[in-house]
Amino acid sequence: MKIMTDWPRIWDDDGSTKGYGALKIVAHILSFFYLFIVYFRNWLYDYKILKEARLACPVISVGNITVGGTGKTPCVILLARMLQEKGFKPAVISRGYGGRKTGPANVVSDGHNILLDSEIAGDEPVLLAHRLKGVPVITGAKRTITGKTAIEKFGADVLLCDDAMQHRQIFRDVNLVLLDSKAIKGNHHVLPRGKLREPIKGIRRASAVLFTRADETTKTDETLIRLIHREKIPVFKSIHRIEDMLSGDEKTQKPASALEGKTVYAFCGIANPDSFKKTLLNAKIHLIALDVFQDHHPYREQELAKIRSNFVQSGADYLMTTEKDAMRLQKYPDFLKELFMLRIKMEIQPSSQGFENFIMEKIGH
Figure 1 (cartoon, rainbow, N blue to C red):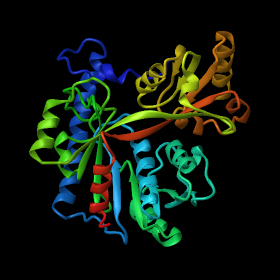
Figure 2 (cartoon, rainbow, N blue to C red):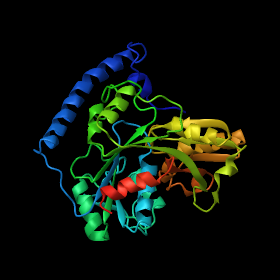
Figure 3 (cartoon, rainbow, N blue to C red):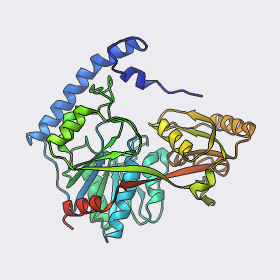
Figure 4 (tube, one colour):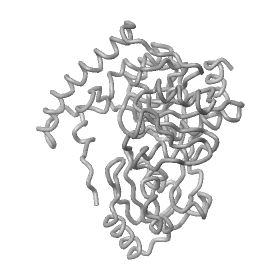
């Protein structure tokens, strides 16, 4: 049931054009136009022709320079909870990718009630609204508007800007850039020829770099590492752990240990399905099947019926998906009752204290 474009083959930089050759050539040409737009826009900000607006409270941006899942959502959750423990009133502002925009400032959650679904707000903001009690979540294209709404309407005293590395409308006190430990594997092309949203030298704007999935034994891009060291950018590392497993109707919660030795039929529509697969296998389960869909895939009733049928026929102990996918299944309550979503948390390694101290110093606490 794989319906995704094999972008890794298009992005592969082995020097040949075999396999997706024509698409590679077209993507290479298009990347020059994309690169010009990125350079010109950053030039306008770097030379103050376009100015970053300062809001009335500290701003922490969580972003990356590559496409694909690097763990931004678990990081926002970690930061929001950390700030709450320190006595702050954080709010999350997001563009709401994948949702149908309804206005300049869409209140997904007021901190107590979830007011919009994933079709309107996007799956990631709704996920954050579910996980972060007491934290308003607001979507909109202009961060200046959503930020002011969070401050004026909800009394936020620190803003978490989700996926905002390339959105330079507002000044940020902390520009945290997340990088998968596999990084970019030597492919320094920008979209659509490569995974980069902007040239790697854009990392210079980072206040700090957070390497995610640091427990995976893969080699990080040497050019990127040299640039980080040359710019003396602070570096932190993190890993992803299973927090628990929660039934789709949120009525049954089980520890990660409940998975050990069990058979699982899984499906997902996320940017990094391999990460989900590895997480499941690390939980010492027997994975019968993993159906992979495109990122942010809007599930249809017929697809879910087929998934359920395959699950029943497989005799697996659990039908499982990611928490993000479950946010797109809210209009199918009967199906939600039958599955479990795997909830992931981020842990700073080897200790979170240095990371906390860095954030608190940057926001003047």
